[in-house]
Length: 151
Image 1 (spheres, rainbow, N blue to C red):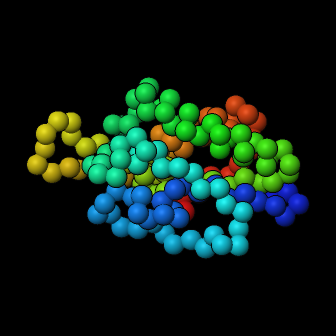
Image 2 (tube, helix red, strand yellow):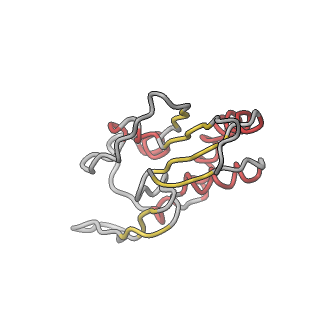
């Protein structure tokens, strides 16, 4: 995506700038230099919805109508802001969190047995997380063109 008039807004998954919001026990995301950039940091839907003491979860477990509505509602004021920047000529780039069930832009996780298990297993696959799917749909409905990739 070419920047319009040299202006770009970088929209990032929450834990790309705040590693303490990540699921406890998993490694930190790639380090990013954001100080000199125009950045919008999205909220962490999993932390808000499930809290800091949440357990490992996969995309297919989050694909419920209620969680999708929650994600859409959470993103709406950010969509308003992004739409205004877009209308002012800014290019929009979304950075996702690799392998996230909510914020993955290119890779996410699926699987994991239901019910009580001794060991939780999952699979990393190509695809978007639930929150980023809702973001893509909302911005698409508003006519906002953007680039999206994992960090």
